[in-house]
Structure formats: C-alpha cells, structure tokens
Amino acid sequence: MTLYYDVIVVGAGHAGCEAATAAANMGAKTCLVTMDMNKIAQMSCNPAVGGIAKGQIVREIDALGGQMGKVTDATAIQFRMLNRSKGPAVWSPRAQCDREKFIWKWREILDTTDNLDLWQDQVEELLVEEYGGKKTVKGVRTIWGVDIMARCLIVTAGTFLNGLLHIGRKMIAGGRIAEPAVERFTESITRHGIKSNRMKTGTPVRIDRRSVDFSMMEIQDGEQDFHQFSFMSDKRVLRQLPCWTCYTNKDVHDTLRGGLADSPLYNGQIHSIGPRYCPSIETKLVTFPDKEQHPLFLEPEGETTNEMYLNGFSSSLPMEVQIEALRKIPALRNVKVYRPGYAIEYDFFDPTQLEHTLESKIVSGLFFAGQVNGTTGYEEAGGQGTIAGINAALMAGSTEGDKKTFTLGRDEAYIGVLIDDLVTKGVDEPYRMFTSRAEYRILLRQDDADARLTKKAFELGLATNERYQWWMQKKDGIEEIISFCKNTHVRKEDINPALEALGTTPLREGCKIADLVSRPQLNFEAIGNIIPSLREAIDRLPNRNEEIAEAAEIKMKYKGYIEREKMVAEKMRRLEDIKIRGHFKYSELTQLSTEARQKLEAINPETLAQASRIPGVSPSDINVMLVLMGR
Image (cartoon, rainbow, N blue to C red; front, side, top):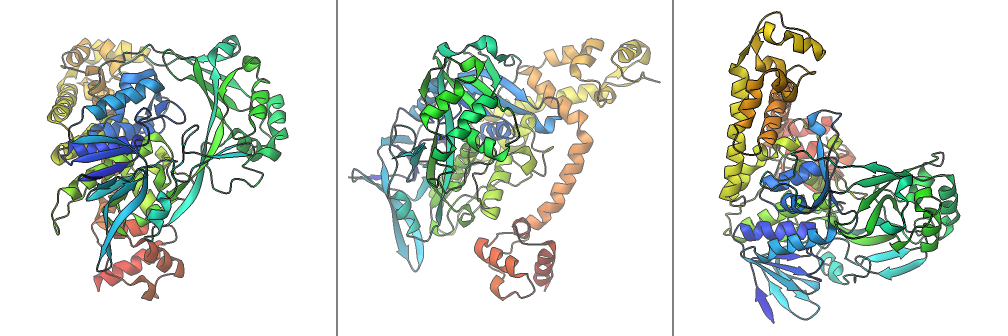
C-alpha cells in the first residue's frame, strides 16, 4: 500500500503536532504518523507548560499561528507569571495543565485541521533517492509495510529511537513507560551520513494524593489575573488548583545514598549525558554532598485525578529505594505511588548538520525537530516543530530553483536563539532554553511576541486573518494608550500629595502622564488611582484591555533600553548580511587557527555572524575572513 502527501511528520509529540498543523494550515497536504492516537502531545514529564524563557517560546508559537498557547490556556489548572520581582525582560508565564484534557484538546485540533491526516503506525525506514551524488527524501516505510511518499519529511520522534528505560539494574526497551521503543529507524537515517549519539533524561515518581499529609506542606497558589498564553484565548475554564512544597532531609539523603550502588547513573549502565538543569535527586546528592535539603514541589496531574507529580525527585534508583526515601519525608510518611521514577536513554542527531530551517544539509527535504535535535522540553520542541513545519510547507509548494525559506534571527525570537545555538554550537547535553542564552532579552519579552512575529506569520499564510486582526487591535490599543499618556497634562498641585505618599519625588511643575510612567516607583495601576482619566482610557479599549495596558506601560517605561538594544542588534545584523558559505576552503586558510579551520569546515556557516558564534572561532579569525572577503 502506498500513500502520497506533500509533507510527512513522524511522531505526534509537541514538535510533531506543531509541525503538522503549521504545514497543513499553510496548504500542504500533510500526514502525521503516530504509534498511538490516544497519546498525542503526551506530557511525558511534568504536566506544565512555560517557565523561564520557555513561556516566551510558547507566546512566540502562538504569535506565529501555532497551537500550544491555546491548548495550554484551555487546559490550565494553575497559572503563574515567574520572575515578577525582576524586570519585564525576564517575566515568564507558566501553567500547570490537566494532562488528559491537554491530549484531547490537541486531538480535537488535529481532527479539525484541513489538509491534515492522521495515520497510526510505526515508521522503521527512511526512503531516499540519489541522483548525481545528491540525496533527496522520497518518504518512509512503516512496520506494516505501508509506503508513505512525500517531498518533505519531518522527524520528531522524541525519546523513542532505540529508547531504553532504567529503574535500578532493570532495563527495558521503551520510548516511554509502558510504550515500545522504535528500532531500526535511526540506522536507516545514519546510513546516509547523518551522525547520531545518545542522551539520557528522566522523570519523577507519581504519587496518590490521598496518601499525602498536606498539613505538613506549604501551599503554593496560582494567580487569578488576566495573563494567558494566547491573546485569542477565553478566560481559563477549568478549576484552579494549588501546588505544594516540602523538602528532603538527612534521613532521605542517607536512604538514597544507600542505593547508589544500584543506580544506573553510577553503576555503569548509563553512559550518555543527562540534563544539567534538571538533574536526578541522586545526581543532586553527589554534586552537592554538603547540602542538607532540596526543595520538592508536589503538583496536580489534572482537575479530577488523584495522581500528583513530585517535581524535584527525578530518579532511576531501585523502586524500593525511591519509596523508602519518600517515606522519610513527614508529609509523605504514608505515601502510595502509582509508579516510580525512571531514566531513559535515546538516540538524537547532530544538529550542526542542519540548516537554520532545520533541514538536513545531507539529505534534501529531510527535517528534524524536537528532542531528536538534542533539546529537552515541550516548549523547545514546539518552537522547532513550528519552524520545521513552515519550511517543509514552503519547500513542498516551491519549484526547483525557487526555494523559499523562513528563519528567525537571535534578535527576533527565543526560537531563533534556540535554533541558532543548535546548528552553530551543537550539543553535548540536553539543551534547555534560559533567558541568559539570549543577548537581546529586552527585545524578546513575553508581552511583545505578537509585535515581533504575527505579521510574518500572516504573510506566510500561517496566522489566520482572525489572528492578524486580533494583533492589529492590540497594536492600535497600545498606540492609543501611549498617545494618551504623551498628550495628557497633569498639574502638580493635583497629584503631589499622592506622589509623596507613594515614596516618589513631588513635581516642581506640571508634566505629561508619560513622564510619570518612567518613574520606577509608579505603574499604571498607581497612576490610574491618582489620575482617573487614565483608568477610563484603559477601560475604553475594546478587548483584553489589561494586557494591552501592560504592553503599553512596558514599552514606555523601558523605551531607552529597548532603543539601545535595537541599535546593538542592528550592528550585529550587518554581519548576518555577509554570506560566506561557498567563499572559502577553510582547510587551506592557514591564517586561521587550527581549531577554527576544523570547526568552520564541519559546520560550514551561512554567514559571518553565524561563524562568530561557533565555539573555537575567535574574533581574530573573523577579522581574517573580513579582510579576505574584502580582497
């Protein structure tokens, strides 16, 4: 049996779902192949979306016409804006979700997306044709002997490629707990010259809430304000639930240390590298031996289930050791578990062999997105899936010699930072996004993702006209509030007593509202209490007025910083315009350092700016290439 499509997506995780809907919404006839249609967009680890820098990525996916933000808003059971004590450049939304409702909301979207078919099967072979030394994707073959043919293929297989599960000394092949691994597919890809390697990740124990003594824990409530992930979402509809915190102790640590001899991380079973920023509890004990306690966060898995997730207790120790250690925590002394934590090893592919479009440099029409590129996290996967889906649709709809592409710069999106880091620097451990990885954080705020990306998505045909009109409405509202503040005069005698009460210097003469906004002690809420006309102007906005007002306030308050960072980004963009691919035979450039020659030869950067970000390529190497380009 043979099926024919424009784009095939292998794997229906977070990368696969975004890739498939993006390609289909751009008009490409798309097939999403998944092993289990009941576990689409499964939240394998924590049932939460967002967090530091990850929340910004979800807002960017939404601005590009993607789905993750809307699904999260529809299934959120707790929402918080992290980093509120810091500047808005690093404010990061995060939501706890109902795991099962998240899956079925995604399934509803996939089932109602035009141009998109689902096929339940397992892919085992990449089909490639070769003409004149150039390799091109033809399609895939499944374990049931079905050939699915297409011009473009996106691999988003997550942790399933030769997946191996570990609990203590016990090892079982699997892509997730109780789900089979995918064998042979990696080998059908690497035989074409694409490099693969192994990584490791893990997940914590799942706990029955009925066995927890919550009186021994600290409650952590969510926020009930206007913030959401998607500007198009309705208000949160599910019951909002608290999370809970507690700590490990010396008895817990002693029990865990007693099981280290049987830990797959320390007995030689696991050789691959795990995530640095989400270590297992046993890794924490070894890395920080003097630390007397570690925080744990008990989080609900859903609105109605008793299953809870113990964040901070990822482990692959023997299950009896995990449970015995948990019972040394006062709140968990009678704990019952649904399943222990486990580790998983899996295959990934070297991302330096990809273009910024996420297309392979070796096999034309072959794209990779998500954990198969060495990343960790639903959000990083979804961002990559969006870009891969866009570019696969563009390629499928283009003619030979008229290949269109879509990429994002480091000053345009966290997704751009993520992909540039992957293809330029590669990975030696699971990659996780942080605000500190972005040099233009003030430009990449969570509140202005629409401003950066929605017009681009609309021009691609990805963002709908409705999505674009929502952005235009928001844009007009921001400009309206800024104009009101710039043009509305206030008298000193009317507001000086209130200013002194708020701890800010009284006025010597009248001023505009915009002058007050720039003061660090003041915000729109405080000013609106003093000057009712500002509150009235905000209330007159047609929709989502609080979000519009916040965006306007940030834009005004940080105007100087924003403009300065734009200037810095523009200077670097000039190097992005200098194309160097095909201009040099790096192995022959003796003026460059040996390391620079080797790295440049391996990665073959597109631009001088990309070359400057490759580890081992020094500023003097860049100057040499500039001089040679001048010649």
